[in-house]
Image (cartoon, rainbow, N blue to C red; front, top):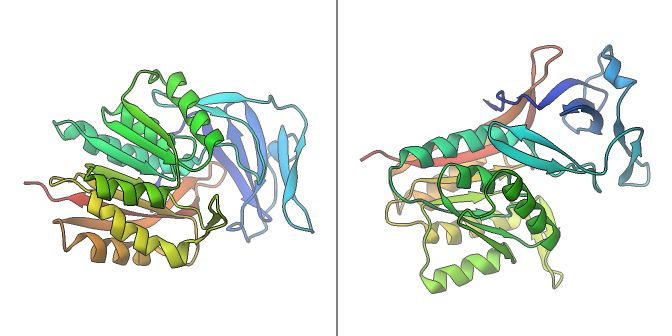
Length: 289
């Protein structure tokens, strides 16, 4: 498992009964997690003295219960700064487990010794974008939600990257890929973080099991003659690491020589030394010349 273990401003403190107790900077949050199917004693005082808790409803969805939490606050990861705010469906605007991938591709970018262009699809609030830009890449950031792109811009500015070579695009990722193919544009690294399910602006249905492989096949056409890496993340339990590995192998192997790895990503749980699984990632890295 690839573990995001270099956080100082974030930690999973404990997990039990379908929930996880987390520290986000100075604040403790309790949020549901479908992976937490065990029940253990909730000994940590945070289970009673949380700042905010997201509680699911029997009718579907859920809502936040706030005690003492600002509307917005920030945490740091190394030399990056991320703005956080609780919003619908339990999220805070950041997936901390992805730091394991940020470290991986940032090292590749820094070691490339040449200009690197990165395409970040389904780019959300820009964790991967600011990580790649901080490592020295020029980045094209694509997300269909205007509010998420604005949030990502704020994260970039807070991380000292307001003037970095980042293109911010509010667009449908699939349609953008198709246009880039027609334009003949290419990238040295591609990051893809697709949702499990979604709807496009015209009611188009995205279901990851049905749509993602075709998007991978189209996206790899955008890799440059000397690509550096390809990354795909999945939070869908049906897409196990082996499935991600197989998709990457069959899509990229005919075009470029490289090494494929796939594994779960996870976060250490500070109270017991265990690791909470948080989805899976598939990585392709070019073979060294």
